[in-house]
Image: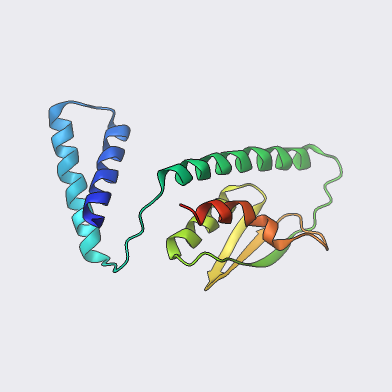
Length: 153
């Protein structure tokens, strides 16, 4: 099942990135995709395979886009303001996600949004640098929206 999943995913990416739908390119893409998927499944055996829910993956992309736009606007406002009183901090946020790839996706999502940077992941704790964190702010608000959607993927 993993072999088929990765083969199809890689083949779709091949077609999208190449933009060439000639029979020769399709055959080469199928061969390369299958070979890479076979190599991956042999090098990284896994007992449990998690299917990705396409609906929640789409919702995640929308949430990521929304957060990117909002955080870019906030950073632009701070950069252009005369008074740039920042309160940077490193906060430890506990995640409820169990899967390593979901934790990695959460960490990367946080890092992609301007103003935040995931420094480390230790077990179920994410250490995040934020450019503004005041007393009384909720640490969980940094990850809450992403974590809720990623858990359902």
